[in-house]
Length: 199
Image (cartoon, rainbow, N blue to C red):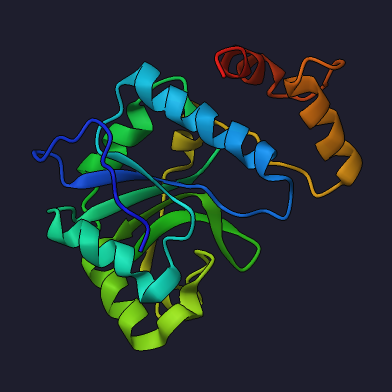
């Protein structure tokens, strides 16, 4: 299992900030940049109890068992590339009384994968019963069993993120831009420019 390194560990807080460094079928350089954006944001905002994992759902979610052993009760899961201008949402996640398995935003038939809060005990129980069925953070059983909470939509305004497009031309333009070869247009260009300049 991938080693766990907790960044800015504060054992007084029972919520961890899990950056999902997800494989996205784009060049690894692309997702490496997105991960670094999130890690620089952790440093900038002083976010506590942060960690990175490429696949938190592998081995029936054994990562969550380890997090439980470390004293964590909730995991606030975001994709690499997520960054915050303020820490209001992180404070919200820490203070959230989560008596169901998952809290998030609906997207199509599941939860938006780049912003989800899970109850670690309940998730471990679900994963031990259903294996990797919930892989991908869509939690169909939780939805079917009304075992979820919808997050306050106002929280979304504190978040910006860059999600890589599957279009190969889009990917190539981004990779050239981060290597200083040409311009790149995107709605999140200001924050990308800020962070990529530090990489």
